[in-house]
Image 1 (tube, one colour):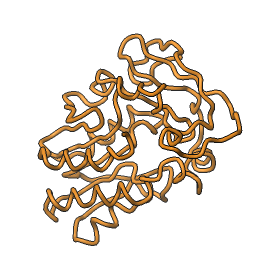
Image 2 (cartoon, helix red, strand yellow):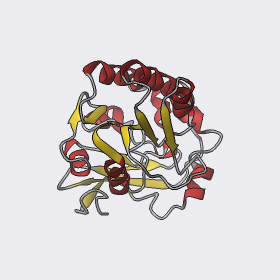
Image 3 (cartoon, rainbow, N blue to C red):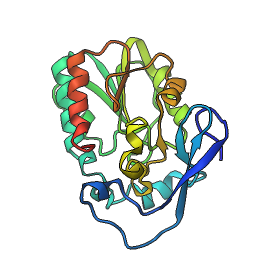
Image 4 (cartoon, rainbow, N blue to C red):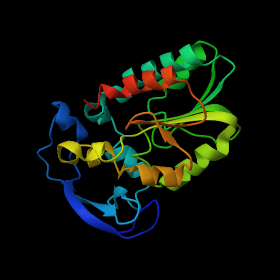
Length: 240
């Protein structure tokens, strides 16, 4: 197994049912179907943890087996709570002239909420939305609870950096190691589509110069402390 971030050798550390959900930690439903085996490995160089179980999956298979009508059972906040909380934070701390990209927008509600108050917001999510080519320059780029899902994190990071305007803010939320290894690696839920658990080192390889406000909220640029605090509150309820 090779690390998807730095291509170094990864050693297996955990085998988990493909039907295992992160939501079990919060009292969610556990599947009785043993499913297939997803093996996660830890990189010897950058300490990134990932599985190759999803390698080669086309988008169609992700839509059918992961991001289907039952996905909300395993990640309830994705449908409405997280987009609404994030939109509230953006409208509170950024002007309506801010051009926003929601990378990995899931339900698409965040751009809808922002558009309602006059913010130019674009949704991008290859797993849930019909897409046109993404282009232009954005002032605020959000990647909220997404990076752990993407099959190719290098491509995702390159896209965000390419689309960032001068002096743009990029905000990424994903739970870093070692916190992601707590409670028997609860973060590694194949049924949620969680492919990765990033270390501080592996995240920095994708986003040189990135800083962490907390183990779950990371940024480039100069977003306000208050905005980052509100972003942490938007995702923290699903990590306690």
